[in-house]
Image 1 (cartoon, rainbow, N blue to C red):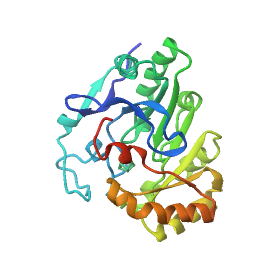
Image 2: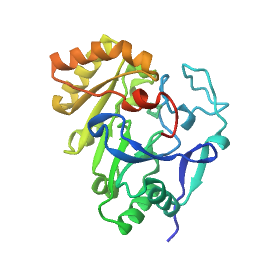
Image 3: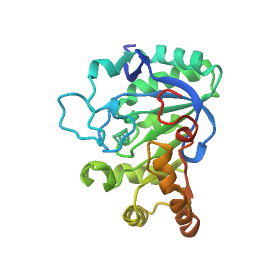
Image 4: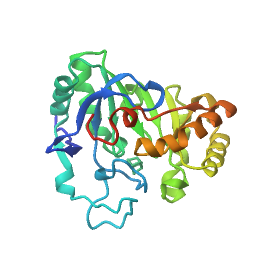
Length: 252
Ligand code: SF4
């Protein structure tokens, strides 16, 4: 059977696959192997993985003003090879997180990688970090254990038509194993979250609010303010554990 190569982010000349603790969301703190795909259909101005999409010669803007050479930041690998790297880098860790970029742009290739890993050990567990704009195919719907859906608000700088795809959002709301994480900068963002919560009937208990920030200093400025809001309004709070532990260093 022909295979479809996975386009992964490249870090220090190697595919960005690393063994660490899940830093955000409902599995925060769980030992995990991250596999970072390249490419994204959105272009958030504060994105902390803009090396997956903000190529030289494209019109997208980012708050850092930095552009990336596509050939220096993408590597294509066969799904079987990615599975082999997950087993060797993960040293037995069975919680695998497909992230990006937007991983659901490459569902066929991920499906092949998942088949390889589950053939080795059915205990492998998969989480997907998605922006919630793509509907998973049948295989992915069945195979993924946890959807971490981070639908984007207007603070991301994306046009609403691009960042909110009603059919995709309804799909995730219908799934027991989906959680909704919103990146919060200001009080206006909370009004948008409440609107989405009402429009799409997202259960409040499945909504996590997370302060925006790529450094510990910027997170600290919003953390206590947002924690109080979560307590008073019944949302779950998510920190960014990896920033606390390792700052903005990649691949840890
Ligand atoms: S959706 Fe995620 S990966 Fe894509 S630009 Fe926004 S923050 Fe970055």
